[in-house]
Length: 185
Image (tube, rainbow, N blue to C red):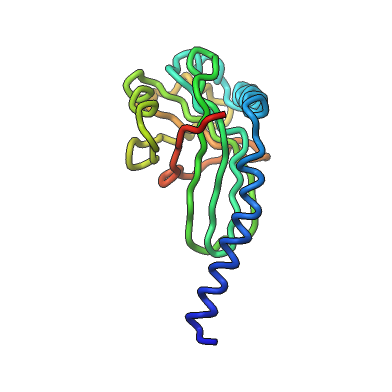
């Protein structure tokens, strides 16, 4: 068998493995499970982001993904399901997906909170058929000092993102290339 055929066989095996791993996770969440996860993630946001509760009161909408699973073996993929809340109530359900190439091995889980600070940004997101970070709009991932209140930062971006791991708020990440698509639950 040639090197090219080995590569094709390896790639097919990798994608089959990834789809078998991600597929049950992707289809497992009911609307009830997503809503419970969203509530817990927002509770964590209030706890880990000083001033987070007051900050969210300014939001026009909040998109929350309680668990985004990333799996990689050279080629990586991530997937998660969440809910858009407007006025504190679930408005719609969304999935997020992204792919990556490069040195990566293993699996991890993270939570994502996207805060829409303007009505225009929220309406543009809601009207899209598949919104892609970095293409259809940029997401500012905020960094601030430990113990500093989020409300003391002058945030002018229309969409602000926060990413949490099981160890807390994560910095120096990007959401560029992540696609957000409305789903029916």
